Length: 415
Image (tube, rainbow, N blue to C red; front, top):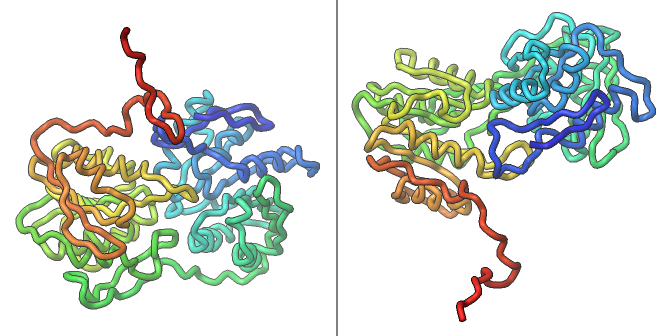
């Protein structure tokens, strides 16, 4: 946990779920830059926070929580974890949860927005989709301000604001962050947005060959089948009977849909922390398995599923959190999978070969085998035994630091 100092006070903020090993902050210089601008502490006049204040893409509450101390806000986002972080950070600040109204990017937006603050997302498609949805709620007097790190704001980003909202300019960089200023133009033509996107899968990938998948904006590889998933689809387990299957980190749901088509007696639970991903998975499944049994949920890994409730977990874990590379999400996924698997249940994982998932799985499950591999990817299988869960060595209290380039200090010998 770290303390964010703002013109409205200091706030202790953390990502969700909290992990003492995770040193990533819940905000960055871009959030700080926008907050200073709104308050008028960067030699610009303060922005009047009146009417409906909407915050799009706030990642962990770094914008919504400080502003909620001054004025109620509407937060619009695609992350279940981001919403949980915002609620937890409001609690830490002693602010009522009602001071931030939480909406997903799939919900109907407010009918009128007087101040729109945009944290530029990693996905340009998600930004495009949301500006299409929010533009009708803007009026000539709406204040529109965006923020992002300089590496996140490109010419294409500014052109998107210009095309969908109005005349746009950007600020100078401060601590590698920039602001975007846009003046809404209500006379701009309002064409329908291009999302969701649907495409047919190629042949030769098992039961989903030639099937159509649905992709809402912002999900991974929304315009094509990524090569890791394609490799996974060619080596899924062949099982029959009333299995409880989990597609963990489901994305557009193609893996879980393939499992349902291969085993019609199974029931598949699709889980992802992205609301757009869960909506994509449901559309993909319903289009291809209209009579199949399935459940769909946005969540924190498998925290909502009971112990010993699944027979098979299929997982293609992410190894990025926004711009940071981390295995925190994969660790939680693997530990949750072991908890929800019945004895004899299996976890199947696909990942980049260099990530070394086999080491963590062997420590956690006591076993791990390579099902298939190529120069880039590997598919791993771990089986839940009946013994107690093995502790994750990375979670142990760290010992004394080892001197760089030397041996661990040894205790003095007795005379």
